[in-house]
Amino acid sequence: MTLIIIIAGLLAIAGASQISDRLRVAPALLLLTLGIAVGFLPVVPAIEIGPGVILEGILPPLLYATAVAIPTISFRRELAPVAILAVLLVAVSSAVIGGVLTLVLPSLSVAWAIAMGAVLSPTDAVAISIARRLGVTQRVITVLEGEGLLNDATALVVLSSAISAAVAGRTSAGVVLGSFALAVVVAVVVGWIVGELTLHLRARVTDASVDTVISFTVPFLAAIPAEHMGGSGLVAAVVAGLVTGHRSPRLLPPDHRIAGNETWRTVELVLEGFIFLVMGLQLFGIVEDVRAEGPSITTAVWLAVLAGVLTVAVRAAIVAPMLLWLRRRGARLAERWDGMGEPLQEFEERCRAIARGEVPEDMLVPWDRRRRGVQRRLKGLAKGRRGTGHAHAQAHAARTIDRIRRVDADMAYYQQVPLGAREGTIIVWAGMRGAVTLAAAQTLPAAAPNRPFLLLIAILVAAGSLVFQGLTLPWMVRAVRPTMEGPTDEAERRELMGLLISAAKDVIPEREDHPLTDDGRRRIASDSQGASALVAHAAREGAPESDEEADWAVQRAEAHARAVSLDIVRAQRQALLDAGELGLYSAGLIEYALTRLDYEEIILVYREAINEAPPDRVIPAPSGDGTVPSTAP
Image (cartoon, rainbow, N blue to C red; front, side, top):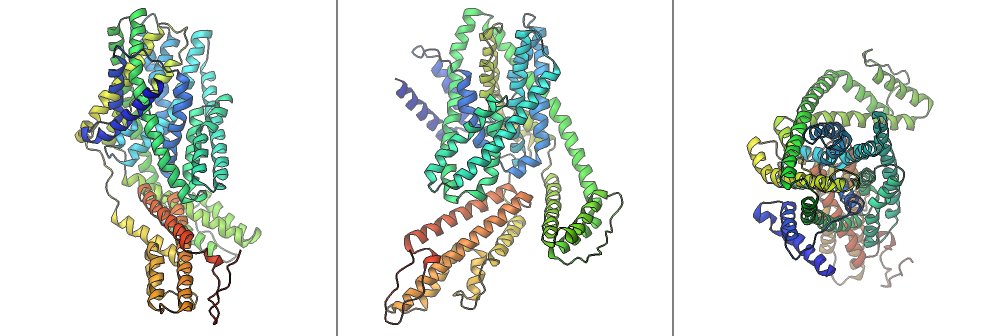
């Protein structure tokens, strides 16, 4: 029977994902509705899933996978609004909802009411998939995803502190702040260590399937130790995911990453569907418990409506001043940055001169006295050149140039994609509750007053926000018309192509005996994907078919072309990753170009494996008697 239920659940998840586009309804809403309908069937018993299953078994891999997919540069740029929504908003929501519940339910103490407010405060990162499907700008999605990834820690710390206060009768703001700081610090340290160690371990694995299996353990390797050390296991899984997403293109082979990504998409599909399906299935059992113990279902419904309205109202009250502050801060930083244009340009030119080793020892520092930080940095560069070695000064100057370019790209990003009132409306309305709310409610101890009643309020708020806000979000997007994610800017695309061509030109050898013509070099530089075919065709056209020596020359030319193409692809990937870390191009364009390069490298390696020995094992052409020496071992 259990196997049949699992198969039916998988088919339901697949069916909802398949028909969602036709119905224009998110799969999460279809599965939630299906779960509620099936749960109320007479033949289906009441279902209850322990909170540990979701908090410890389902959410860590889901949050980890989401964190891996978030561009690190975008997450860094949106760290300020994410921190406000993930920390301040959760704390304020817990206090406001708790205060209102205390007024309307006098039997509920302040501590238990705040605990309930903490349960209803966090948004769900999984529910953000509904907003992503609508095509709103990636900046809004990054803010929503970052909030959903990190607000769990704040909510769970507030929840545990409120429960301790309700059971033990005492707590303090210092204890709550200390618990939160410990949870975050431990999670960040453990998540970073696990992410780095597992990446270096996976880099030594030669089988893509084995690498994927190891990746399945990473979120748990981060979450379990963090929980035992007093940290947030969910945040640890998120940090491990951020480290993995940022570092894996430099450490893991492309075939491993592509295979892992495809497998993880399947895992995400199943786990997301399981969460919403189970949410619906549990409603019947909770309703039955409330009917047996009271208060009435009607009271739970109107309290859930009240709590849902409060969550949206408090969210709007926090988002509005946050956007105003972000706009003023951005304008102030942009004005300051523009005001430093001329001296900053001169400073950057001097840094470039240091990097080239062209600055004299008695370098002067023409810089405004008010810019003492940059003045000290420039003097430090000159001092480093004289005292600690020319190479160190060059490296220091290069890093300084990168920092200037990064800040300049950040300023352009904030100006090109501002967060205005229209985007703020979507941020408010897309903050839906989900599985985290239900799982947090189930952690309420048996000593909680009217625990089934509180569970029913939690699931009604979560389900109601998903259904009402999720179904009306497309209408809201059409009504307020926020900035949408459009096609890649053509000028940006051309600039990126110039970067790739420049990286390719630096790799193509310039030896006189190189088999490529000048035209061939230009074509390889502009499109490395055609390099192997170009060289092979050029070599075959000039070689007689019956001449064994000519045939061997063709094979050498093909092998050499593949080696050059591989070097080009890897150099282009390195250039793309460096540009991505500086934020010089949009995250979507960088990801698209990296994917193309990954598939090109896989094709080249595959051709080399089935057709030719590796280039370093290709030996000179056969001697005049026609004999062919054996290859190197």
